[in-house]
Each structure stands twice: as structure tokens, then as C-alpha cells.
Image (cartoon, rainbow, N blue to C red):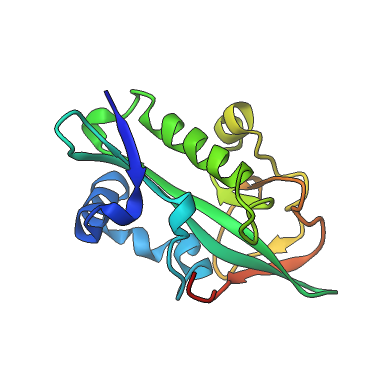
Length: 173
């Protein structure tokens, strides 16, 4: 049985090693890392999956970012991901369980950006199972290469305007 816990309760070195195994050691070169540079994961929206022996087998992180609108103020968003699952445990529903748990936490949260989630991912998967789409992200820019069809968002506060995704440095909770 998989148990979900706050990511804060897990050794950060173990999480980094899991991310390397799931995505490769060169994962830091991806554009998503540029968008969230200088931020820390949002603790109430970041979780770990543990197996029966309390070994880390999955994680989901959420990050404070913003859309620097071309015509207005910064719009707070939460960047979801990466969702990582130990390679030997992939295809067992762990990533989906982590995602649903995070979405439930975001729905219940009053944190800035919790009503405007975004991620970079497969639109067929994240649209079908979690309600993310690119209908409002078509004029968003990122600090690096990305496929516009994979820039997805969900939530009533997602802006439909032109702008650039930037890190949102936040005060200590």
C-alpha cells in the first residue's frame, strides 16, 4: 500500500536521487528549472509516496511562479511538477495518486496561485485525467525553449493574457 506524506518529511538528497533516476541527471537544463529558479517548493502542495517499508517511490513538487503580464501586475501561479516515480514502480498509478492528492490540497488551499495551476506536460494525459489545457496559455512566454502545446493550465484564476512566466519569490510561511 502506498502512503502519501508531506515532501518536507523526506530527505532532500533522496528526492534529488529519485528525480535523477526518473528524468536523468541533465534535468536541470530544462526550461521549467529556469522558471522556478530561486524558489522553494510550496510545502502544503508537495508530497512524497512511500511503499510498505517507508521507501521513497514517488514525489510531486509545486512551485511559486507568476505570469508577468504584458499589460498588468504579476499574476501568482503554482507550477506543478516534476511528478517523479521510481522507474520500477511506474505504470502502477502512483503518479496519478500524487497528482490527485496535490489537486485536492490546492482546491482546499487559500495560498496565492492555488486557483491558477500550470505545468509543462503531455496535453492528452494531463487534460484527460486532470483538466489541464492550453486554452489560456497560448500567449505565454518562458525563459527557454518549450513546446506551446505542452504549456498547460487549470483553475478559475488562470489568466488569458500575454506575458512571461517568472519565479515568484515568496515570504517565509
